[in-house]
Length: 166
Image (cartoon, rainbow, N blue to C red; front, side, top):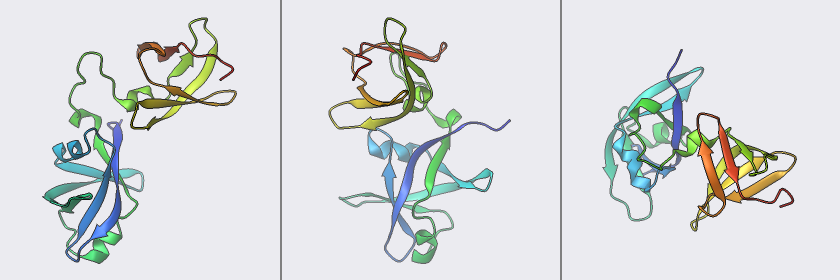
């Protein structure tokens, strides 16, 4: 059995001629991705571990240098690649905190027990996070205290105060 890997970002472009890479981080705040000294890239049916050697200060984007990537051509070959980390690398969530990855696939019900579907994804709108729930139709449900009544990871269930007609 292989350890679970979670997506934390992706490479969006090459930077300079010495192999720099621009990174779109899915962590909050974005530079938290740098807390992981080793990133994993998918390679066939497995993962290739690669070390982050340096962060390059740049005002408009997160730029890194990776071990073994020392030319623009090598960097361009990684553009579009997804960055993964092993679940064991993540810090334990604080009380009342949940990783987005743990919400994906959970069933979403109303308090009356009506199933609205399953969480397919989450969106960061800036104002609040939004659950993308796929059921009889796609629903975008705000992940806020007034709407989300309960999250039970053991039962794999989220209970929301949401009208099924929305």
